[in-house]
Image (tube, rainbow, N blue to C red):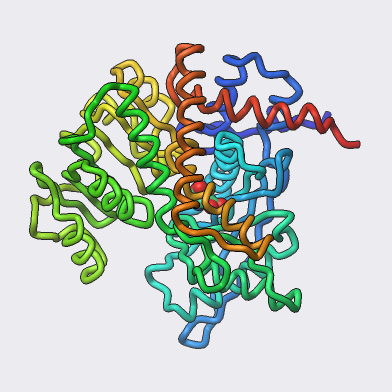
Length: 425
Ligand code: GLU
């Protein structure tokens, strides 16, 4: 007898893909999701694994493995970033693709969910090697991407320059410029104003909403940020400008804490000069892990998955945790934080500003008509505020945490599209 997908699924306690599926399963029960639809949306629609030969600077060539996963396209083309990281796995990319489906549905933009990844260590590669890798990876996945099919974007360790190479490679293969194939591009080749800061800006807007809902004043509120890449760095400056005090930041090499507030511009200069925030002298050293437990009002995990666990959840001091990273909280930690009265703004809400401005970028590219930054930020604010309120309302009415509230909204929208379209053939 043939095994169903359920029977052959490998289960493992802290596997992110299992975690993503169980988050969906719980909400399916909560909202009474139609059984057939539930089965349908538990699995990715399409998985492509590619081998990527790359000529290295020493003349040899190396083989890399890459993935593009399209989870669901009921509401529109696939959308989601590409990460370059040594720890990328297919299960991780599957989870990230599923989270993109819910994220796009939550902010109600007409995209499905997808994600890509290449197992590599970009920090040890030259620009030429990165370009070679990007161009060949793009070529290998070109059969399933395109402005109407699936639109990649930046993610962990991928940059606007890398998006430019993706756009150029795809365009050269088709014989004309196709800026809408990828978002997060440099402005001069069809990128959008505001896209670089969009993830952090969206995060700020939902934190502001949460502060208001919980009656915590912004003035004097202390913020700790784990991760100082695109999301973490911009979150530090935008939150500082809004009146929050940034007390601790960290990156993979370590962190720094100053209870009276860090000089964010000086920290950024230090990172630019040394490659890390870790040895910055305007505060005390703290590990990348301990930043999570430091004394603060708002904690922003802005790095990688699975950092909030059953071990540190009881020690978190923040009142709000805003997930700028994807998947930082394990399900058991989620329960502990909720029971302790800490509001977790889930990834699909807290970091949805990035994909929202990616959507604006794609619309501008298709129309060849570009908007002012003010207009972009205003539209972003409207969308993020609405998504927060819809999430909060669902969380209140089901008496559940904000993640389940957000899933209730998002899964409901994907289910509606799936039912309306019906099963082909
Ligand atoms: N990588 C980002 C995310 O996880 C952005 C995706 C996009 O802009 O398509 O949401």
